[in-house]
Amino acid sequence: MAKDNAFSPTAAFTAQRNTPGRGLLLALIAICCALEVILQLSDIGLLQPERLRGMAYEYGGFWPGLLKDWNPNYAVQPYAMFVTYGFLHGGVIHLVINMITLWSLGAAVILRVGLRGFCILYVASIFGGAVGYALLAPGLQPMVGASGALFGLAGGLLAWMYVDRFTFEQGLLPVAQAVALLIAFNLILWWAMSGQLAWQTHLGGFIVGWITALLIDPRPFSPETPSRT
Image (cartoon, rainbow, N blue to C red; front, side, top):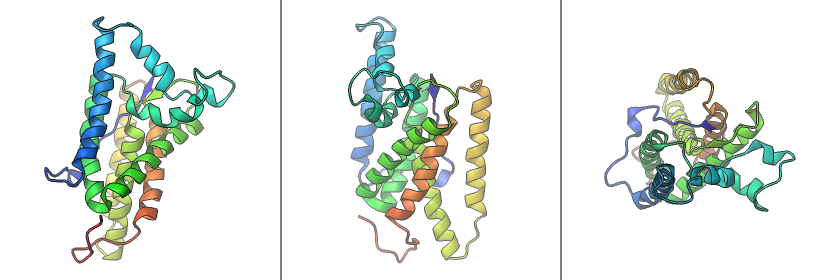
């Protein structure tokens, strides 16, 4: 089972306590946490059936084989899995890392483009992550995790940083450094996880997030720019 792990590329993407729309972020986090708690209870035998995690992956994970000649468990699974994989995780550590990242990056995106912009970017990125895995993954191993969407949020924030810094002639080195850090982080994790990192999902989410962010709001942001709603 390939897992995607996300992280915040810069300390500037730290969530603020009074972020507008934090209720939506908390709802997304609550859904992912509730699913993992249920699966953990099943793992230790306190909830039946004991194979619940396996069943959740079978029905909600991303399976490249379903894009070929595999028979789905339900009619719309080959389409639904492009979204459902993002709400399942490979364990508590995987979940915690991703949820902390969701809170910090999500808050920064909402402050920039509002709730509507965040929703568009999140959905597009989670889909982009699945497409990246479908196109680049070498085998038929399933994949779960929210990091396709999270790397999309990071890609969006870096796209806006690029536009802002380019427009106001502030230099693009911080953007290049952040991208390089993301690449290095993925390489280290891929090595540490013996190749079980779904870097294809990260790449797909990042690229789609970058493009989508510029479609949502291509304007540079300055103190004089009206707040997004």
